[in-house]
Image 1: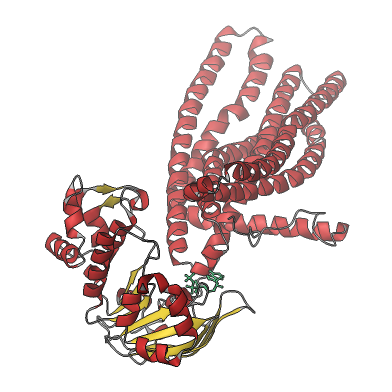
Image 2 (image 1 turned 30 degrees about the vertical axis):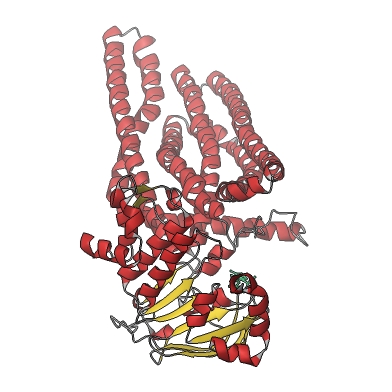
Length: 613
Ligand SMILES: Nc1ncnc2c1ncn2[C@@H]1O[C@H](COP(=O)(O)OP(=O)(O)OP(=O)(O)O)[C@@H](O)[C@H]1O
């Protein structure tokens, strides 16, 4: 039951694993990765720009907080050379007080910068989440066909969370590290340029380590996020399809699938974490090497008289401090990488352009007459696999069209085109003489009512669910719609009548009851054109009778397309369109079609045999 998992577009293959990756290919991939990362960062900056002033203040606070790191070793060198060695106790006390004051200021600035950064990151992510949500609501159904719900959900959860974690720590820590490195360098050059050069000479070592480990880590993190999305998709599918899984006793098979996905994820995550974990110890190693080099050079310079004891002590301190922010940046690098991977996956969704949208100044009539024409309509879901072939039909306003045909014949697809859930490949669909593409999409859908056999109800009261058809309707209008649709009776007997809370997707109602509610909802919406999908599953005969009555009420005076399964509906239709493998093979009313003694007559004999008896 799992959908084929497609690789998310825009995700680059792992270097070396793609076809034909030579070293030149790898180099290109790496360059493209860096370019991509830069683009992602620039794009993310567009979101943060709105908080420029607050960010500037954070930078100022980080600067203040970095003061201690820059000034303390210098103050210590003054304390040693000017006060401790000459024995000036009051001078020493003064300098200790200054250092104490510095510590207090730094603590306050540190807290404030963190608080502000959390707020900025929450605001930014709120905007991003909002944008992602509204974009997903506009994306074509085609997009949903190739992505599982869980995979899409993981953009809201894992990916946004990764960005959030990074933003709340990375910005301040990265800034303070950069400032600390620059500050320490400036202080070193002021104090003793030759020793400063010695310290600087050890820096390339860090770059080599970061580059080698970082490249591999970035790939592993991306792979981890991708697998997380797939696993979420599988879990979501298993939760939604739990009844079917149990019925077909597929629990063990589903667990096996999860196990194999889990193994893959474990492998990718372990690789990512181990690589990320390597960074810390390797950084420590380079720091210790630098410390030893500076200590040795300092000793030699001391003997040569180029550096005082205080200066050497300050340098050893600075060297330690120099290493800390560099290690910190290396550690942050991992958070930055997973945040970048997350942001890329979010942007990838945002970059999907809907192909179906409202035209500028589209027609927006408040009501339609309901004349529907299909002219030579062709359509395919997947390129090269035609589903509908040369469909022609005409429905006069107020007429009742029944669509019949074997499963997979294309009945639902006709409905999908009329609602513009998908756009036609060629031909035209006209409503009241105008191509559907010329209508404002909202206006078009406002005039279309849909009652499907798999009714979707939202979490909320029965009242809310019916009102979903027309948010402006008052309570009396809701009651009236429920009465006409024959739903009123059963609703009255619910524990809290119209105020009864429906659990997710109306799980606490029977299928028949859910359908009655959706008929009431469609009635309240008062559409000109109706699309009904009769339930194939049997409901009890009383509910079925009510549904029939409700639907008849709903169809009065409206053009209706019914995917019909019941003989009574088919008999009552003005025109029956018989579909077979994407083409209309016969058309006419029930009697005419029976007389033709063709496909319909055969279908009728086998399909409605039991009903006819
Ligand atoms: N989203 C989709 N992507 C790709 N192919 C699809 C999609 N939806 C339907 N199809 C294919 O289009 C064909 C027509 O499907 P459609 O749902 O229109 O049939 P139907 O007549 O409504 O069948 P049923 O009576 O079983 O609901 C089928 O072969 C189906 O596999």
